[in-house]
Amino acid sequence: MGGALDYHLATAHVRGRLSARGVDWVNRPPEHKLYPGLPGLTLPRPQGLPDLSLARALHGPAGALEPDVRTLSNLLFLAWGVTATQSGHSGEHQLRSAASAGALYPTEIYVALESWPGLEDGLYHYRSSGHCLARLRQGRVLGDRGFGARFFLSSIFLRSAWKYGERAFRYCLLDAGHVAENLKLAAAAMGLNLDLETEFNDQQVNAFLGLDPGIEGCLAVLGSAKDLARPLPAAGPEAVAGHETGRTSDPGHGMEVILAAYRSGCGPGPGPDQDLAWPGPEDAPRTGLPETKGPDAPLGETVVKRRSRREFSDRPLDLSELAGLARVLDQGPNPQLRAGFALGRVQGLDAGFYLLDPEAKGLSLHRPGLILSSMAQVCLDQSWLSRAALHVLYLIDLARLDAAGPRAYRRAMIQMGRLGQRTYLAATALGLGCCGVGSIYDREAQRLLRLPESVYLPYINAVGPVA
Ligand SMILES: Cc1cc2nc3c(=O)[nH]c(=O)nc-3n(C[C@H](O)[C@H](O)[C@H](O)COP(=O)(O)O)c2cc1C
Image (tube, rainbow, N blue to C red):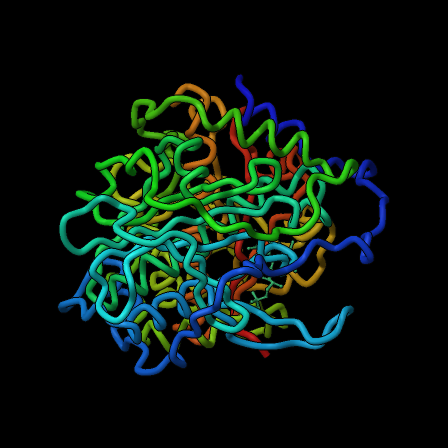
């Protein structure tokens, strides 16, 4: 096994061995990245959000893109904007359009634009708080001849490591996936096709964005397939302005381990795409799911309404709701991970752990019996989890990822975050509650679900009707 996979095993939660270190509130890293020397360009208030359905947006772009400032404003707002405020430990706290482990928001968005009407060519940083841009580079930074838009998602690892220590890299990858899916879906709903790329020259991209390599790294780039195939110009027309990202690696927050895991995933790629589906028992009974187009509530409204909900009611789910949730988990060919369900209260289906077909049309029973209370225990005894109607489970096979090359772990974890965000949105569109959970006793989950030795459960979404 290699770096990132060793990392996953080394950061497993083990019952009785959780770190007792308290949260260091005084040294909390800044929540927002600021560019003090640069004037902010405040985007117009988001307005006229797309009413294309979530199900339709999943199929790719609809209609023609109108590239103007309002479209960019809506796009960035839906991807990563502030959609609610909450009073918390340290005063008023802003919540965003995508879920984030511990609401720590390590993800940053940069966008390089060329010939985007109403905006000068250049590289911009988006700040959710204030819904504004700062221009870091000027000119035709992509070296394209005509229209160009490329989005870069980075993570300031310390924002999450400050609370979660070494394990935080897992959450940074999942978080980036959540944001990426919001961005991709919003773009599709506005007529812009964004492909997601995790194979790129990390050093070059990080330098282009002007990132401090001790705390931040780019994890994903989104653009049209044609644009992504072209490398960035070697040198930008102008240096990136100085910026402030807060304190650098404080000892004790696991930053060394995180940076080593990140760098081990910067190796050459891509590895061969592999079919990561693993067979269930030969005779596993399979249940087909009812045909459905998937959730049809408007995407814009759904993203704004999405919140983590934990107050589940007793109402069972029906099969059409389950099919609606499953629909958004279709990953197409060569899935990098496998999804399943721990079913508690779903009409017409017995409780148990089911694997979902890769094309999300049917389930096979893998381990029968009541399971949600045990799942709640495995998830660091978060007892509210036992009251959900079901848990969506995301499984990776570390041995197969290892065989697929050094970047495969990063890619699979980002993909997992993308599916997590889709599940959040599907649940919201269906009028259900949802909450992601990454706090899991890793080996206990493996035993409970009777998974093969190299298969792990890094993340789940609890879903069900809410009170
Ligand atoms: C990767 C990840 C892991 C999470 N783990 C947990 C968890 O273990 N327990 C929990 O109650 N919430 C968990 N959450 C939910 C976050 O706490 C929630 O997204 C955050 O507080 C922001 O609130 P919002 O989702 O309503 O915007 C997780 C979210 C993500 C994306």
